[in-house]
Image (tube, rainbow, N blue to C red; front, side):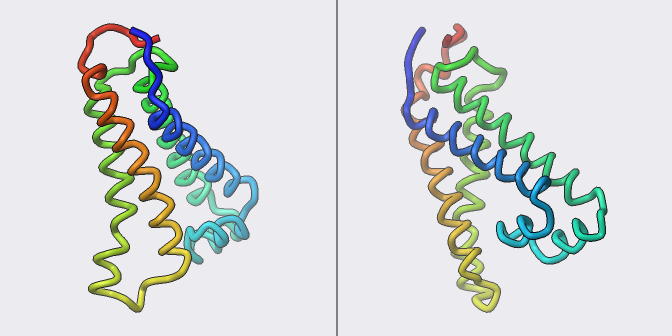
Length: 149
């Protein structure tokens, strides 16, 4: 079955961009960690040459790249991956949860809201909505046992 889902293609591209930005933080160092809101503790650990920030950031970059692969598989650009429906629903849930976390923070801890936090939540919410719409539109095809590409 050949189909193309522009929403999941966009979601995959967004996840790849996020993965690349995480790799950029490793290469760019403490300034990049600060700019992208990783927190002062992570930036200082990177300044001290500790491995933890790079390992954690590389792990996140890897997860985001895998999420991109699932989006591309769901869009029919690459072969079907295991647990397609489950994975795309879980990825969507993580992105949506991360994007919407700003609401309870605003209600219960408004002093913890930052401009960067608002922007990052809005950006990740767009990621989540892209995966949500793409997964919803691909849902019937995702149940098929055949390969997409």
